[in-house]
Length: 133
Image (cartoon, rainbow, N blue to C red; front, top):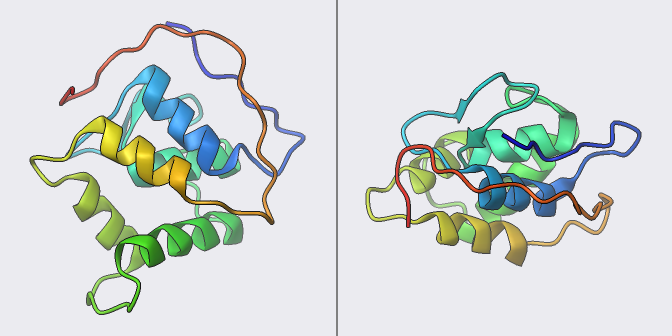
């Protein structure tokens, strides 16, 4: 399976990179990611953001935390949910009727001007992890 290239010299692929990972490789529900954390074959929302920022689906860097907080702000603008950013985003990702396109749309609709976005040009065959649209 073709993998999305990651340029380790940048701060990460940001939200666009996370969207590309899910869009091209696949999306997970009920599990964070499939495959090795350095090169997931498919990922849920949180793991995709972590990989795009830090090259590892389990990373927890300050940049990752900022992006996850920004995504949470889109879903819970008044911070009324009594969950951490990761818990809220994972729960949102895992809603049974959620579709891969919903996750990709959230990621592509959110901008992080302080983090560079790198274009991904390598084609890859899309595969699906658990649920498909």
